[in-house]
Length: 462
Image (spheres, rainbow, N blue to C red):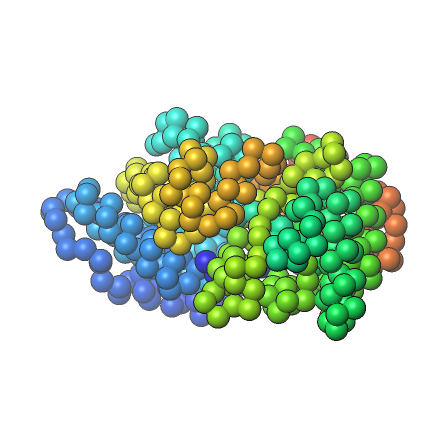
């Protein structure tokens, strides 16, 4: 699976200015007009659906193969088009097409934080799918349901994971830490001997602290692990200003210089992975896709890395993991919404998800599949995703809707200020809560599309 920076800060918000047609948009329009159907006409009345899916070539091929199977079984035709691999470009392209009412797209693959952003242009799948939603993970269905409308179905799950040097823990007789205090202790105990042995670049714990969506993901996990809430509650109420959330951030800030390098405040997910893969850390927070990188045939750490749930905040805390992943949706402008919903039903079916899990490591969005021995044997993180102790935490994107990019940007600035030692957590979260309450009329109205986005509380450049 391809690396993806946990994205959304860069997405256009409620008050974004119109963008000129992009090269990607023009290219896709041309392809939509000229691309040949994948399948021959089987019947005179066969419908033709156009699907946009895949973040890279191999993923598009998998989508195309599955769509071909559905088309052959139903006698319809399908065109599968790849979309821009960069999330920002893909969202901009989708917005341009959807706002123009382009009826040529029937199924689109969207990021987990986009349902609330695109809800005005997506079809309610509920009437077409009946009780199918009950077969998927409840947090994912909640994420894809906006104002009671199921506007997408989860295709696969991503989540935050703890990677650790299995060989070092075994040699030191240290168990995999299950709480943040235990991780701090283990990181120190492993870091000091490695440095004393001649590797001054070795650190105990790597994570992503630069002002980007990955920081929102990390901060949400820290806060939720100490039972400090989810920044904004599903009801819309702003909950981030509380003692447990402040404690979580203050504790994370103390890692810098002790078990984490100051460079985490500037490193991307790719840079974090490179440092860990180079043998320079004992623990790392990252996404499932890095398992394949760490265990490639020529990887220095092949066979020496383990994976586990992220630690909980003390004995009464939660093993919290921020939800990532991609969903399938039907544009409201589709000319064949019933058939498009049926195609999605097949693409997210147990049969297709099982094959994708076993052959490519995609975590199924159907919990029943995480009991399948073949799926559990595919990669170690499947068992982690199936761990009953795990709490999946969604970013507040669905409830905040078009305001989510602004919400996430404000969260990043506040958290970064605490990590960098510029502000204490209590003051930073109080200011953050005031700003979010102004945006939402104290959490009662996140759908005020006509309001201009106010100036951010913190003028620090994004």
